[in-house]
Image (cartoon, rainbow, N blue to C red; front, side, top):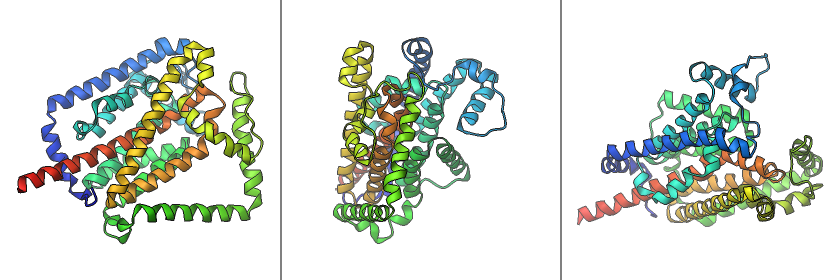
Length: 396
């Protein structure tokens, strides 16, 4: 993989598309649409009776909506469902957007589906809670749609030299704008892959694509040290600002009844922030703890799903890191992505520790970028490697 010619994947994708028949492609699309329809039905007929949808909107919420003059992410989302409700009343509105998720997923993966382990692909698409939150009316459903738009653009631009058509950029910019409006912290990682893929043709021509993994790691360490040095100069940031953020997140969950089921977390200073990250980050992706799952059996399937989710997440990131070590060209894209992803997860983990239910919902915003995007990168890389092997055989 050391000499991977990323730009040569235009031909790769075209040839793979020919091998992957239209019938199979339609079959993939139909299966994705079916599971997302079932996800919406399960959410509104079963899940809602067992647990809360958080701030997920019920049909009556957007049916009688009107604009009160105050613009926000909530206003925008309710407005979308309100006008969609005119054509697709009630549960049909979120179901239609669930189908949009299915179609966008199919569009992103259809050319390289044959290069992915089918069990891994469907495991990533059949997480029950992902289907619930991608099939119900909420900020998360819109965010997932926007996320898939961005990662699809990034992967195709990076590997196939995707032309910068105005219509494509418009959809990407609209998606990024919504992300910034609703989840600024998660927006950063999506914006990072957009930038590195946007300038991919230029990055391949400069010396930076010759850097070894060690040089990249050293660069990131130096950046972290410089940032830490600048921050340490401002004692106010290290004290008041960080602690203020911690207290703000804690209050957001503890200020209303049922907002938190974990009220005994030590959460007073920066050392608490660092210490709790050791268990809070993995637990945030898993959801309920083992003790919570045992004491409340209805949460045990959720716990098992979370364990599988975290295992797949680790597998994908380890695989990406190995790929970055094997490909000089891909390294310039993969390592910044991994670095920023880890930083954003570290900064955002407080939102995942005070309430297991909220953690399950919040992590869906990261599903396209943490699960689908690595899956796409690995699939495109395998496709390119396979085509190089076939070309060498033909040359002999």
